[in-house]
Structure formats: C-alpha cells, structure tokens
Amino acid sequence: MMNQQQFQRDVLSTAAGDLEITFLGHGTLLFTFSGKQIHVDPFGRVADYAQLPKADLVLVTHDHFDHLDADALAKIRTPETEVIVAQACVGKVDNAMVMHNGETCEVAGIPIIAVPAYNILHKRDSGQPFHPKGAGNGYVLTFGDLRVYVAGDTENTPELKALEGIDVAFLPMNLPYTMSPEMAADAARALSPEILYPYHFGETDTAQLTRLLSDTDIEVRIRDLA
Image (tube, rainbow, N blue to C red; front, side, top):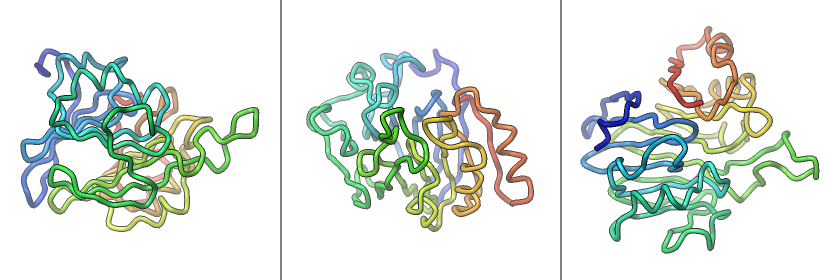
C-alpha cells in the first residue's frame, strides 16, 4: 500500500470534500478526491507504482519519457481506468482519450480543461522548441469549487497567463526545458493563485521564486518535486 512509501502530502478543503495531493516527485502527482485516484504523469523513477493506488483517471501531459512511462502506467491501470493524453501521445497509449489544446471534458465527475503547454524561447540546437505548440497539455481540474492547474512542460505562454479563477497552480521551473524563476513568477502574477507549487524544478533554486513573489499574496509551497 502507499503507506509503505514515504511521500509529502497536503490536504486542501473544497466545497465537495477534501482534496489530498501526494507529491510523488519530479512532474508526478497523485490527487485523491471523492474516492477517486487521479494520477498525473506517472513515472517509475519516483515511486514503486505496484504499491500505489490503482487509477480511476490518468492524465499525461506529453510524450517525453519522464511524463509518459508505459511501465508505470500499466501498474496502476485497470480496465476501468480512464486515460487522457495530449496530441504528442497519439498512438503511444492504447485506448486513451486525446484532448487537444483548448478542449474540455468531464471524467470521473471532474471537469477538465486542456491548456496549451509549449516553449516560446527555449529551443534545441536544431532550432526546434523542446516542447512544440500543439503537442502537449497542461490541465485545469475542478475539485468541488477548487480549480487546480497542472501546467505540464511549458513556458509562461499567453494561454497560460489568460487563465482565470485558478486557486492552486503547479508551474515547472527547470531550464532550459521550461521556465526560469523569473518566467514562473511572471506566470504566477498573471494567474494569481492562492497557492503556488513549483514542480519539476531539478536543481533550480526555488527560494528565488519565493523572493520574486514576496510582495504578493501568493503562498509559495516548496515540496519534494525536483
């Protein structure tokens, strides 16, 4: 069972009961809400997925190996598990539902919005973005009256900054693939969530983000998500 592995957890109140967030590591999360288990980007390097709860819903942001891990996914998937993937994952996950940028749906009683996740500035030596526009998603999930945004691998894009009503945000902060602390702070100021979790941050100094947002009311919570 999950209690055999030690992970940080937070519990947030919603109008429809508590939301428990388990911080598995890297870009990988587990939401427990209303008896449902929602896994985000399962990745076998951060946890023994054979010991984790089976998934009611899995969200995959894009096809990079540390977000789309077929072995980890198989260990939590059942015939009833719903799997949502981004365009980049087409043909790489059997029996998955593809959400394109901007689409909405409701799965397991949870409204979901697919938000574009892509690079503007940071590119490979070939000139191609690390994450091209249209390939990857972030997801806005509504738990009761709480709107949670898991950004995926992205920079501070116009689509991200246009989101409204976000209560909790997970923003990636690892150069050169996603955002610098300055980019993440810019995104956070636009979103203005009550709680901000930097995630997938590698060796980035998270204290820098806290300093950059020290003049705001945003609560920056640092968890083990390197």
